Length: 345
Image (tube, rainbow, N blue to C red; front, side, top):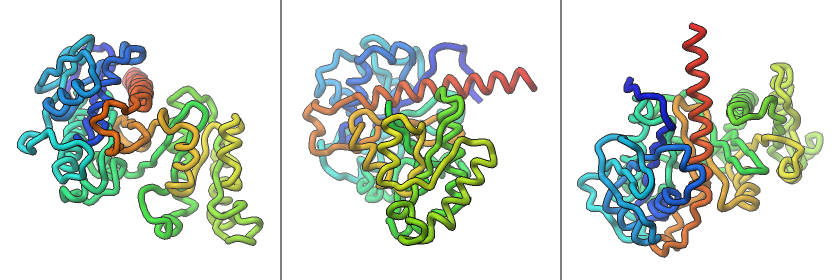
């Protein structure tokens, strides 16, 4: 494992699809100040594409190609490690292109290797385009599934984070019909535990966890289905028996509002849109996606490539900046845990 002197955490930011807004929000975040004064960043991507992004947004940045993290991007310098040689980048803005999917995958693969080797402390990923990814031959639904394979993680989950609402998903990128078949008592328990651990790392002493039902009114005493009584209620009881502050299954049409108003710290959603719709309603520009269950730290803006505005310079960097902040917090907590474990050994 590569070792570095103790200093500010180094975050590797992947470029994402070069035809989307990823490079632009990276450039804007790099000059935003605030939290970026507490971290060092290096971009894993394509120097020419990042230079185009810097010009597009009018940032005062000098893009410098490096082979490995050095002093970290700071001031007017943005360090970029090239992971896209031979792809012929940059490519046109806003177009689905296999080269964009290939670039996004290569950047993520390089970042994961660096994180596992200890060269960077966390990964922050800019958005990729799923159609372009599959056109390039990578048969994945998105970042979460790629990260699971690249790291060999046994179990991962998607946690959406905003100031007033935190949501973790029992199932992710799949059809609703398939998702319903994958909702089990055991999977619900594992997901809630992953979410509770993540919130503990982010400062919640004993998170209040609300388990959403899957059917209207959480089944209404089996009137609208048996899944809530047969699958989800036993998971809630098991979590309580294990000492977690869990409750439910709650009617899914009200539980997110209750959490938003302060009644719960975390909602366990049963499927992708059940959790994503309320989050994107209340925090479209600021929510963060945290992949929990990995051996490394990974966060990402909770939005897509926005091909419709790519190249205009109008992309909002707020979610990218918040992703950097959350990644830095998680990386510091993980480092502290490792140090404590080493001292106790």
